[in-house]
Amino acid sequence: MIIEPRTRGFICLTSHPIGCAQNVKNQIEYVTSKGKIDGAKKVLVIGSSTGFGLASRITSAFGSDAATIGVFFDKPASPNRPASPGFYNTAAFEQEAHKAGLYAKSINGDAFSNEIKEQVVNLIKEDLGQIDLIIYSLASPVRTHPNTGERFKSVLKPIGEVFTNKTVDFHTGEVSEISINPAEGDDIENTVTVMGGEDWKMWMDALKEANVLADGVQTVAYSYIGPEVTKPVYRNGTIGAAKDDLEAKAFIIANDLKALNGNAYVSVNKALVTQASSAIPVIPLYISLLYKTMKEEGVHEGCIEQIQRLYSQRLFGGDLSLDSKGRIRIDDLEMREDIQTKVVQLWESATTENLASIGDLEGYSTDFYNLFGFKVPGVDYDQEVDEMVSVPSIQE
Ligand code: NAD
Image 1 (cartoon, rainbow, N blue to C red):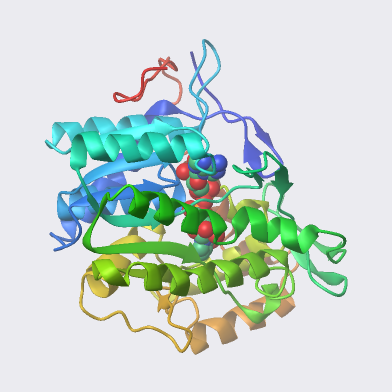
Image 2: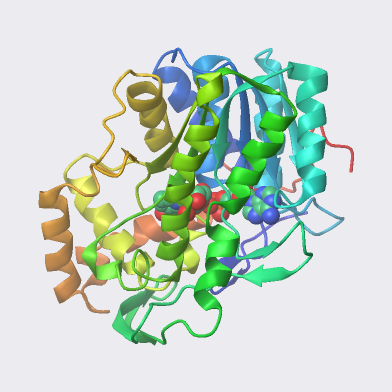
């Protein structure tokens, strides 16, 4: 079929297998060009199919020749209906990994469930024995609790008072004011249940209990802080409460891993266009101004550059440079004072009329389409493509 983008708000309903495969190849090429990283050799990535998780899997495999197991939740294709991009990304990743002689198997299912944890434990036992790095990179709006069956929804709301600020519709470039009502009822607790650290801890408990963690094992989960302008809706909002919980769990998990000489960290990453971040109001405007500023300063990075640097300089580079709260800060360039000062200035003056010139709206939009395999250089979108791509290790 010929596949074109069909967007609805901040999601795209279609995705392109060749474009997704090209994105994966480009990321592999980047990691390969940066040389080998003396890192973990048997790696589990939870949330491995897009964004930071995919970049982590690629960096482990092609930077450190690691065997990888990836867990994700994506839709396979059906006739005339393309798969979700994470599925195509994973298919391409596995093909490239196998070509390079690397072990790569994937499990498509709900990582929050006990069943998927059990499947992963069994796979590790059968194929790898033990693992030495676990990346936790889930971003989900919902979680069914494995013990109670209750379904929780996360919300993106400020806490305490209404938040009013600018936002942009990145499809039209229209800058408008948005007001978001504060959390009410169980909003905060529910968001913490979905995006906090409970599931990360459950994963680590299950892996430890099954004796599949190697001596010196490390685990890393991803967090975000961001600037003052997004603070009420992000870091001081419901999602920030979840990130506080995730960060607190890192210390508990680190303590649990002491007997194995292991450790647990949170890495605070940079704001980037991913499926998760495009859903957050205000963030797209911030990202378009940030991109413009960081590109002008020559310090812009995408997911793969961020994770390659996280691995090569921090995690396996001997210099974790933890902040006062014990977190790895790979958002250091985003948070540089000169960058933030510039973004705040631009923020104040941003309007529908000037955003295309003072912000990188085009970069935002291109990155958004790229997530779904569209507008990827070198791909001929007029060509018929086979949408029925399968992931080699998954029998659907
Ligand atoms: P993403 O949407 O690109 O990736 C999410 C991954 O989780 C996908 O592989 C998806 O398949 C998987 N997933 C979702 N629900 C699942 C489930 N129930 N079971 C199994 N897999 C599931 O998101 P991302 O932006 O890469 O975010 C990953 C982490 O990085 C999040 O914790 C996020 O808060 C953090 N982070 C993101 C940004 C950003 O700007 N995007 C910045 C800093 C930190």
